[in-house]
Length: 422
Image (cartoon, rainbow, N blue to C red; front, side, top):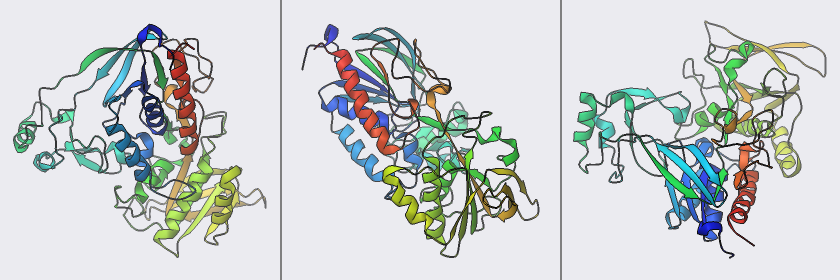
């Protein structure tokens, strides 16, 4: 390997979803010191909240566990959770970066025994389940969390409850005196892999998200179907907990729309097809209807689309859904749409409506704290004004998991090349 500029062979990876994890592992296994920064209390990003991947329909926990094992076994990787990058200065080969870490109030002595959780009384919305359930103020982020360490919510710090939580821990792992801290790192290159967020369905008022209990988003559907989700994997109506036996999937909810997201996220059709299989697995008599503009399932995914489409329990209707209304007595939701194949206006009731919201890059809201170039939607451009800062994964364009991993490999190579002389 060629000599590094200024002797700095370290790489900072911001974000720990599939693109961040893959970048970090590729760079570290090539011999570079890697620092990972993750704003959540656990690694894995949004993939950790998924139920299954398409097209194989396997759980993400398998792949994540393999990557976490590789991280634990590699001394060149150091990660910081509940952390964010506040400042980037300097240049390639010698970036000065300031990292801010929020207090977890639980230290490395934590064994995951759960005694602190048992002592907690206050409940807070569970962000991991998109607020569909609650967790105790002392809680594990989720059952497969890495690091496997509890968190004490700031809402109870300074209260008698916090003291009781601390007293319940026999390992002195609860540290109520933890404070926010900042520290500086010097790195040779930076890979920005902060992933994506679902488009805010509340910005589409005619779909009733937030006011109609049985209108949810596609990311919420993943949690409903997950065994470690808010309902133990049961797909139900949120209004009364009854099984959802008739489900509608509304494609392009806010996407391909000049008033919202002008682009196609590419993965939403496949995600809805996958989620239709969740419904059928739980109840062989269940039915699903998918309202779409165009089905985007190209290349290697066409076989998956063909297979799911062939299921007689799935109805595909070409037409962009209009207003969604709710029956206040039954909680049933009615979808109105013009069927483009017949020209007729259809109105049909469903137990549950799933909005296929698009992917918004993490950099749309949280910019890189340095001079950086983005497109009109907030995606990081391939060519950056500051050499040595590289985008990876869904901050560059909407992609699926496998494409994120491929893009991460390219990002790792670019970061390595940036820090090394030929």
